[in-house]
Amino acid sequence: MSRFIAASLRESGFSVLAKTTGSKPVIILPDGKEEEIERKGLPTILEEKKVLKRGASLGVQALVTELMSIQPESSFVESRRILRPHILVITNVRLDHREQMGLTKPEIARSLASAILPQATVFVPDEEFYPEFQSAADKVKAKIIRVKRNDTGEWGEPGGISAFFYFEENLRLALAVSKHLGVPKEAALQGIAKAEPDFGSLRIWEAELGTPPAPWLLVSAFAANDPESTGLILARIKNGLSLPGQRLVGILNFRQDRGDRTLQWINALEQGYFSGFHKLFFIGAHVHALRMKGGSNLLPAFTPITAKSPAAIMENIGQEVDGGAILVGIGNMGGLGAPLVEHWEKIGRPYEP
Image (cartoon, rainbow, N blue to C red; front, top):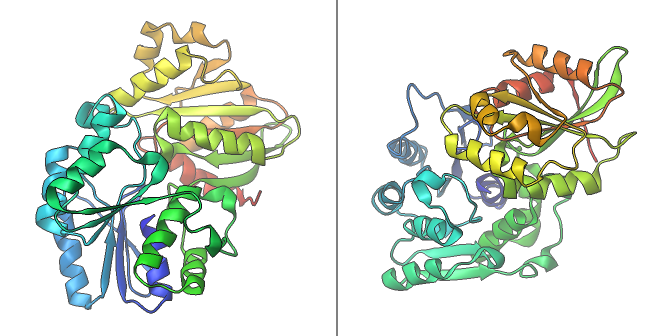
């Protein structure tokens, strides 16, 4: 989302500094070049002060950045005391970071609403709107703009970028913000088409695995995190990818510091979430939790992998599954997720559906 909006503004002539806090946090300079942010410790919202200082030193006309906060009190400070944005974009309400944000979607919406500041203009997809947003906006005289599915439909699709790789609501929001800021239609679409994908975005490679080598598609969906978001990607994969045999294999990565997500995935496993998979591999932390829950009995094709290097993990999968398949990486980008994606970049060729 930040990349789309920044690219749209940049194409229309704005001097823009952007920052993404996704799988690999980066600064996007006014000329489009990127600098990866090197963190010496845990992420902190004080990082935003450095971004503001960098933007001021460069004399940019616009700053586009993602909020970093999880806890609502931190979100309040980050938005109202540090960044003070004129425009705030809420992309979705998902059951993630539940320990910090809440166990239900209304609770999470209330947590997200803590970032709404006085006089701001807030964009939110119509289907992701919750009364908590309007209540928070009314208290501080902010304006809510609910972006409906057909609000920017007349703008068309950006050429040169496959619709398979982006979520429609993200494009819709970016176009709505661009339109609000007076960016011409052609510039917005051209800019978005030129935007570099985030490291954690949906990406696919072709590769050969196993002995004898067989064709595989390697799909990175690690950054989706929660079952609901991942389910949207899986539906897209099942409808949009073609490979002999059409076998779907999953590699589920758990993070040591995300026990709430592990529990979500265990519950999803118990509820038959992976019933359409030929085989499911598990990597990362919390294997003990799966054993305690009887994970090995929930799905006959469930296989833990104890290898720690991406090459060894892929060799193991190639030996376990003959004849090729579609391998989807899900769960978490942290831990073994990012090294696997970097490995896939080396052994694979970019695939266009």
